[in-house]
Each structure stands twice: as structure tokens, then as C-alpha cells.
Length: 168
Image (cartoon, rainbow, N blue to C red; front, side, top):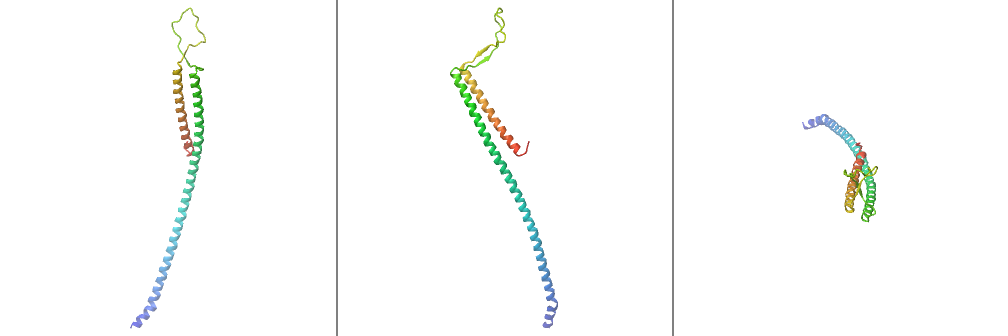
């Protein structure tokens, strides 16, 4: 009885089990190949994205390096301009202190003048400023000029960034 059952199992079940094992293994290998293909495609796509990001990063780094180089050149030019302006201001202050230069301002001619005097044609009445007041005025205008130079420097830096990043 067991021998007959064993013969039936060997004759029918063993080939069926072998066919099942072959189907299972072929499905598993096919699935793994498909997974590997999808995984390879995903890795390639990720590599492309990483390469694109690297290119974009390099472009940004180049832009930043260019902006920094331009900023250095602008700083040098602005510092030279500031030194030259300070020298001119110092020279003017020295001339005012030594009375080699005097400041005067136009004034309105007095209304009550002698009618017998001929009218002054082409002559404008002027009043000379006190040297201390002139020195104060030079200091005020020098500070204003420095502020304007600093603001222009800021505007130039802003424009350089705006142009570099394409926002016109």
C-alpha cells in the first residue's frame, strides 16, 4: 500500500512539485530582474539630478566669486575716492585756518541807499563768513558727501547682484 502511494507520489506529485519550483524560481528571477532594472533607472535618474545640482551649485559659486571680486574692486575705488575727497577737504580746511581762502555768500543789497549813488550794475553784494563758520560748513558738506558716496556704493552693490541674478 505504501509502495503504491509512493509510486503515485513519485509519478505525479514529484513532476508537479518540480514544475511548481521551476515556475516559482522563474517568477522570482524575472521579478528580481525587473526590480533591478527599475532600481538601476532610479539610480541613473538620481545621478542625473545630482549632476544637475552640482552644475547649478558651481554656477552659483562662480556668480558669488564674481560678485566678491566686483565688490573688492568697488571697495578699492570707493576707498580711493574717499581718501582723495578727505585730502581735498583737509587742504581746504588748512587754507581756511590760514586765511588764504575766505568764504563769502551773496546778500540782498540794502533797499535804503542814497538815491544820488548810481545803481551798481553787474556787482553783487557779498558778505564774508567767519572762518569758524566756514570750517563748520565745510565739515557738514564733507559729512554729507561721505554719506552720498556710501549710499552710491550700496546702490552699486545692489545693482551688481540684481544684474548677476538676471533681475533687471
